[in-house]
Image 1 (cartoon, rainbow, N blue to C red):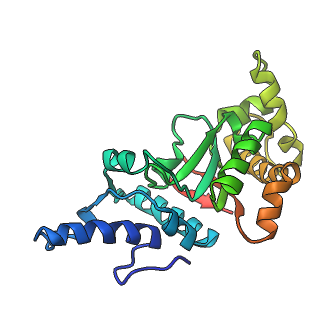
Image 2 (image 1 turned 90 degrees about the vertical axis):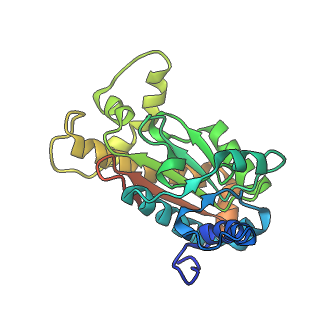
Image 3 (image 1 turned 60 degrees about the horizontal axis):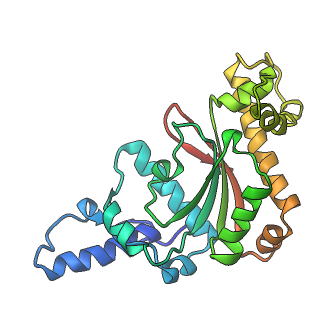
Length: 244
């Protein structure tokens, strides 16, 4: 679990709210309630480096809880933009689907400068994405690689149904190995969304395996305890990001 302040804030939020609260107090408005303070500060190298991969994951879980409960932090994106103009220190890189309903930063209540984001239909890994992950972790210092699938995924359904369309055909071919590997006793078609969701989860698990197999750089970082490669599923109904 991540460290918390006396008020129960996760460590990442506590760092930033503390800085903002101090500024507010200095102007004589210290009576303002902390939950209404803007999330203005950008993550610094010191804050990121002080966190463990488990603490970063815990902070994402807390951010998703805020998203589900409608209690998201009031981000000052203009201030975050200015703070990150000369440097960035993201804590994680997230591989997610292009689906318009699955913007990872919003679902995890993250601000500008906190996450690298790679999006491709079906959240598949490829050489370019692996290179981007290696840059994020080995060069820039991110500590979490998060693969995020989601329910009712059109790319997964297309792979199950054998859809063909230009370059999309080759992309869906990369998802298809997850279909026979998925254990499911019911109707195994794209019209059965329980099966679609089961394949989507398998597809995330396979992407994690492929990241480890195809990137010795990331595999060594994980073996050395410097990063964690984790999977998740975003549930369109309810809004939960389920980590596994």
